[in-house]
Length: 199
Image 1 (cartoon, helix red, strand yellow):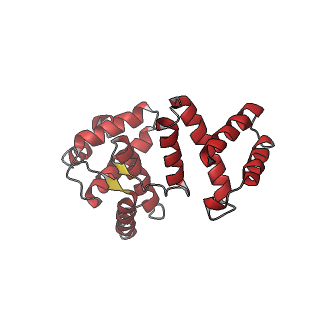
Image 2 (cartoon, rainbow, N blue to C red):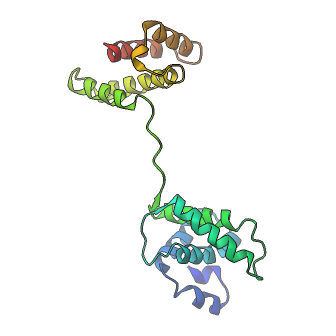
Image 3 (cartoon, rainbow, N blue to C red):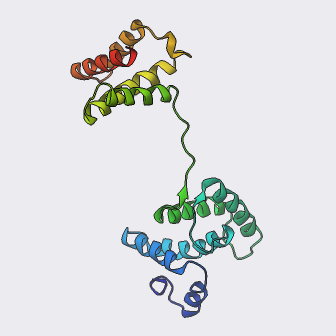
């Protein structure tokens, strides 16, 4: 793959001994198949070596976004003092882009978990109740869960405690949804789900 990117043999021989050659070539071949230009591949290949070096990768492992950002700062500083670097202004962002793309391709990019939504525990309990107590089908459970989650998101922006919810809140939510894209059937099934949720 490297021979397709670099015409000069000495450049290829400089890239080959760097760690994770197979993983780098797999990624570059994938990018080429996806339509990445030759110029972009030419820029990506050495960037990958910098990524591997600054993340201290001897073999593939999970890498967090924070770790990539820290390494990118070091890379930007290196480029600032490199007289051959054409521009260091975008060094960090290019480093982050290539690192994320490469690690995501190999399933090794660890992204931060999104915070759990308010009332997530109550929603989980409701799903268990529908499955174990009511015996609803997976399709009905998925539908009721989704509509109930929409109510809980809407309610969380207006109130602190779920225990303060009233039928007026449910009616207001259903009216809001009816006026903003939900058809009559969706409103009806949402009303059914919310009756079950609050029962």
